[in-house]
Image (cartoon, rainbow, N blue to C red; front, side):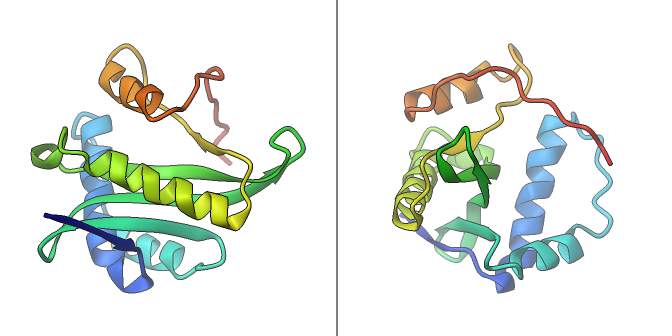
Length: 149
C-alpha cells in the first residue's frame, strides 16, 4: 500500500534520485546528475518556498511532487506551481500520481492559493501525461516558455 507524507529536507537523497529518473525519462537519458543531491538539499531546506509530498511503498520512495509558491495579479494572488511530479514506471496507473496531486491540491487550498499551475512536457510525445493532468481537473492555458539566465 502506498503511503504519502510531506517531503522534508532529510528526503533530499531520495528526491534527487526520483528527479534524476524524471529528467532521464524526459531527456532520453541525456542527463548530468552531478550535484543533484546538493541541489535537492538546498531546495528542500527552503521550507517557506518549497513544498511537496513523497509517496512510499513500504520504506521505498516511488513518487514525488514538489511545488513552489508564486504571486501574480493574473492568478488572483498566491498560487502554486508544480515543479516536479514523478512516479516510478512500475507504480504508474495505480493512483499514486493522482494521490500526490490530491495532497498538493489540499495543501494549496489550506495555504490560500487560487490555483495550481503545471507545465506539461512536449506534445504529442507525452500525450499520456497531458491526459493525466486533464483528468485531474487541470485545463490547458497554452504553451509555457523559459529564458535561461
